[in-house]
Each structure stands twice: as structure tokens, then as C-alpha cells.
Length: 391
Image 1 (cartoon, rainbow, N blue to C red):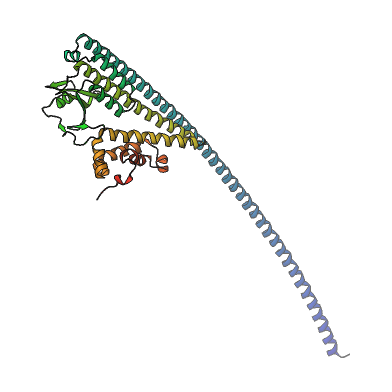
Image 2 (image 1 turned 180 degrees about the horizontal axis):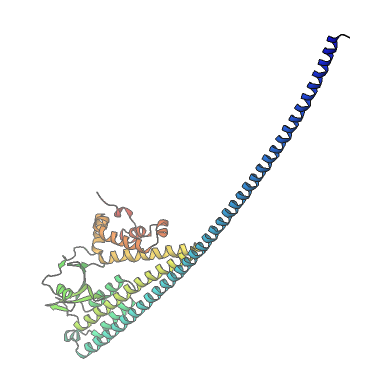
């Protein structure tokens, strides 16, 4: 073997050793790098895990705090609702108690007023009967009439009257028992208008309240007035003159003045009593229906309530329309004849409509227009065309 061969073999051996050493060192470095990478990875994983656990704990704490806050707000809202409900219940109970107290007071006041009116009327009647018996009318005695009997008959007729129109009719009939002519004059603003119970044609002209006439004198002075054969006596309601009873006897014996005064006083008390009862009855029904409506709002049935409210609305509409007819009978007759009721009585109908809507609940008015139905029935005599406004 030559020296070159030996040298080449030695060089190859050295190269192999160097290569093996380099590979060994490289594997060691790679292993160290891998171990370091694993350690760093494990540390990163541990850090990430710790951060995740911290984030989860923070989220859970935030969620628990939100749940606790929502629960507290819910409990506060429930307590506020319960407090509002208790206050509403207390207010409802107070309102019901107040309405019942007002209703009882109205009934008691109406009863007291009726009793006082009846007692006053009986006292006036008894006093006048005594006066009439003590000072008899000579002409009545000569004609064979008994003023006390006429007075008693008139009192009985007035006692039996149950409506305002019936009272005025009974008063006229009682005043005409001696043969004299009797009439009623209604105070309308600054005028006195004749009331025609039977719708007679060609009524007398209205009188001015300041006219020089015994009828106007009686209305102004609130006392009886007499001139020639005309006797005028005021009819009062709550101390105010609402009408005047007038008698004229040009061809007949004049009626007993004392008896006429008693009849006028008794008729005034009868008008007051009927008006007071109608007002108290309407107020009582309104309060009763308001109580029932409040009870129904808390879950009770409504069938009977609706029926009662409808009946009450019909009765109140009848009362309002009947008063229009009573105090404007001449206009009613002329309006039917000329077919212009709405034009002649537009103001009175509008005022009555306002009173009706103030007392009748809206849900009852939405069911039916009882006020218009009563206008057609009572004023228009069943013909709705009479209530159409003419252009």
C-alpha cells in the first residue's frame, strides 16, 4: 500500500470521525433545542391555561353579579307594583265609601226636603182652610159653592200628581172649579210665556217681566197680585219664581183668593218635591252604576250592570226631554206643525244633551243613543224627520 493510499485512508477515517462527531453534536443541539422548545411550549400552555381560568372566573363573577343585580331589580319592581296595587285598592275603597256617603247624603237630603215640603204644604193648606172657613167668600156662598170642598179636592188632585206636567194640569183644573179661567205663565228669562197644556191654538202674547200687569207684578214681587178680575199668584221652586198662576173671571164669580193662594203654595211644594226626587234618583242611580262599574273592573260580571245602566240612561233621558216639553210646550206644538223642532228648540236640546252626557257613562252612550230616541218619542211624536236641521 502506498503512502498516498494510506494518507487517503487516514483522511477518510478522519473525515468519517469528524462527520460522526458533527452529527452527534448536531443531534445534541437539536435535542437541547427540542427540550427547550417543549419547556417553552409547556410554559406557554400553562400561562394560557392560567389566563383562561382567570378569564372564566372573572366572567362567572360578572355573570353572578349581573344575576344578583337583575334579581334585586326584579324584587324592587315587584315591591313597587305591590305598593301601587295597595294604593289603588285603598283609593278605590275610599272612592266607593265617598260615593256611598254622597248617595246616602243625597237620599237623606231629598227625603228631608220632601218631608219639609209636604209638612209646609199641609201647614199652608190647613191655615188657608181655616182662613177660608172663617172668612167665606160671599159670592161663592150665594152661588152655592163650598170653597173648602173645592180646596180639598184641589189638594187631593195635586197630591196625586206624579209629574211636573200633571201638577200644573191639576192646579189649572182646581183653579177653574168656580168657573173662572185659569192659566199658567212660565218665567223664561225676561219674559212670561203662556203654558198651553193641550196645545191650544192662538195663545196669548208673552208678557215682559217688567210689564205693568198683575202677572208680571206677581213674578217680580214673589207675592200675589190682583187687579180688576185678574188674580195672579207665583209658583216658586227653591225660592225662585218659575211660573205664575193667573185667573180671570169677567163673567163668573171670582174664586176664593185664600183658596187660590193655598193651591199655589201646595203646587209649589209639589213641584219642589218631584224635582228633588227626580234629581236625587238620578244622582243615586249614577253613583250606584259608578260603584258597580268599579267592582266590574276587578273581575265581576257585566250583564246585569249593562242592563241597569241602560235603564237608568233611558230614565234620565226621559226626565230631560220631558222637562223640555213641559217648559216649551208651545214651541213643541208649533215645531211639530211647521216641522222645525230642531230649529225652534236647538238651544234647549243642546243643553239637555250636555247634561245627559255628563251623567251617563261613555260606554253606555256608545251602546245606544237613548237621548235621541227619547227626543223622537216625546218631542217629535215618533217622527225623526221633525228633528232634522233645515238649511
